[in-house]
Length: 346
View 1 (cartoon, rainbow, N blue to C red):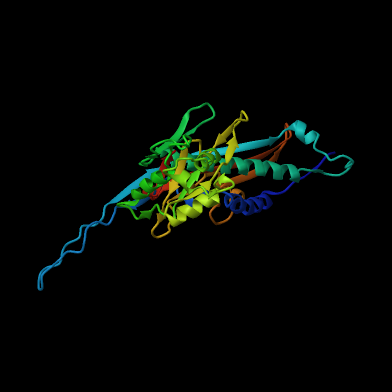
View 2 (cartoon, rainbow, N blue to C red):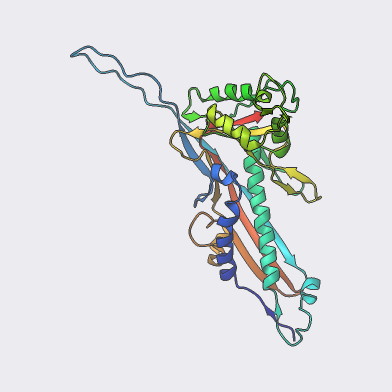
């Protein structure tokens, strides 16, 4: 009679806990929006208003000026529930024995690892889709399997529109655009100078590097007698932008494949994300994993830390035989400093 050898949930949970920090470190989104876990059902956070005014002048023996307390705005969101299962079907289990391994247990651990990688990848891509969509548009929506709206959230982000689209390389003015965007710091504890970053996809970076406007970036090309105007590299442009105290350009062309195999860019063409440098260095947002009902089963919890609210489980069932890998979580972004993010239309 066939038997199966497979990894237990405790082992799989430890592996997942190790994989997540490595995989999330690969994307700059998780620098802008780190992952945290909170044992709450609903996300609520406060945002303090700006400090205003100047110290009051007073005469000797005069009274002190009275300072009004800054406003505090409270925000809340009900996290969206997410989850997938991947099945080892009866047919897959029947044919999974390695060649020449008669009389030995059928080892499912390789299949379990592959299924776990698939589910983790889908989770990370989902979070990246939510985060980049929020930063490029100021809003995001989550749809269910039948196209129904599960949740949506919107923040007050003010886009910056360039004077001429950068694809019009002979008249576009990217340097002037960045100088004007830099002025958005006024009234906020954020800086859009050399420590800021502008994330663009590769096509928009190519348009930037192809600029030939002699009254703007095109004038910065290196000119030699023999070779004429030399092409600019992104490193060349960024060196100049540092000297001009303007944001650094970061090329980001990551994407995901949808269920139909179509490529979906996280940052579409013509859309950039300008991220200012916070005066105190604190993150502008966090993606928070919240309480999940299945975590009442202690075997599904990943221990402490930032990923503790991810539910993961593997179950081998009979009648019919099948292996089920499940990964689920509840979560949403908490956006603390919207003034530090500018959707950049280029």
